[in-house]
Length: 261
Image (tube, rainbow, N blue to C red):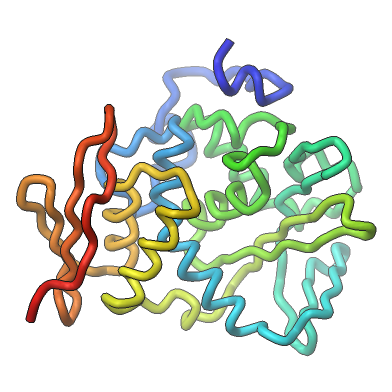
């Protein structure tokens, strides 16, 4: 049995025709490098991470000190301190059953107008054959969890969204919501030093396809770059050089530095 067969409890619903980016609602996000396998979770997540790591840090800076939160699902609004954000419900983690449940199951009978994003995610998952977006429920682990699901849904399928984790009472779980129509300053490109720091932190925290991660991050950041063999040079105000080495079937970052002036 496959990894997904072990982790996910329901079979995907059949779809007519061949699966792939052109079989459903659209093609991958514009910043995805050419050749990303949209049915491969590691590749899709790697492509989304640079963008979402940047956006989430910018959002947390914006709401720092606003610890008190309240969700009104009838109105579709998250209140953080004095700030309010329009939301879409994504899903929830249960630490009692150690499982994730996508919002389209709607066991809480939330209004349909706060479930639009999660239905879009399911549709894209079916079109791409991306199993983690198709199955309603899965077992939690370091790869499949609320943070990672939210980063893919907000990263690959929307341009103006981030997410928020809302812990439930007694520490028994958490709900994840996408926040819509967010300020443009959250999506401001980063400079070379921030890029180096972000890449260094991400490759320590996550299992990634390093080449896809770096290229997608630069494409989203609108930073030009070029290749020379297995070395990428990104053209910030001061160039950043990323050297890769082969590790099995994939490549990993061997060296990451600002170019000498």
